[in-house]
Length: 474
Image (tube, rainbow, N blue to C red):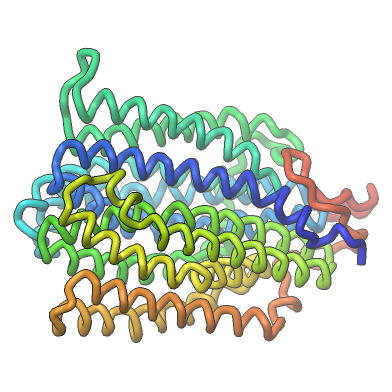
């Protein structure tokens, strides 16, 4: 096997734009949290809670769309470029159709928030934020599908550039709409939500302009809805979507429990989650690169390179997130104080970051192991593991430690730590079995040549098969 395949250099070159992309999203999340924290503690807690509820409503479709990356990566590895654009269009159709019921749900935001029985001071702010975010769901689905398409081809740099641009727009709009600067209305929490939706709409339009120009993937600029491909996309991505929903369902239960404890625990929880994104999102970026590399190498029939890519990515993630855990522990009070100077919030939030520091390595292990398994097309087993541990370990522990015992938000985070440690261990065990190496979503219609190095960028593809074989494949 060529030494560059699955090497640290190859993984890092593909992963670092995805990591920076995720850090850029973290910067947007952080800016929102800091801006709203200057408005009030209740508003800050409400945005954190409503944001969690909004993501729960969107995560089924976002998770299902991950099949776009999986299919595109394997077809790229097999040299079937012309099929990748058709896969993307099926993802876009899925996102547009799914946004209709979610937009309808937006008109019931206040009853939904009340049904979750959060603290009274959070209800109005949470409902306003949730309503606006859900109405903009279609833009989230469109940009997400296109981002996953590019990542599947091995291009992680374009999503980085687009995300940085969109987040800069979001920060500017946050400043203008939350505080009412330069003649804009002072909208507070509603301004934060509207800024995010507007920035996401601009992001979607930018992706349309950039992606559809790549004619090698789009023999037809617009591909029709193809029921066979559409439902196969759902079959492969559906388990991921269900996993996201039920995982986020448990986190929503956790956040709801915290929101009932009052504005101080709610704000401290929101800030700790925002800080946690500094490590979680880059870890997820490494997992994205893992899915792409494993998918492309398995599509090309190079199992050894796929395995090496998975384990190299895992080592990088463990080192990075372990380092971040030490950082969280050493500077926990200073990090919380950046978001909210209230001494009570700082005291509670600092304690929560100790738990975050402890489970960092296990979180990274879980993400990369799951990313490798998904790259092979194995989405069902990670789903079953995640759902089982979330609902039979996480939820009972949160109820016991945060509700039945007088440990409050600290007890809830202790339960979350146990959950993440268990999840990382079980998923890593599944990775070590290596049965995923035998999987492939690409039909062996052609004899595919040995894949070359996966090079980040718009042209990151395996060498094309011979002309005759390519004609037969397409």
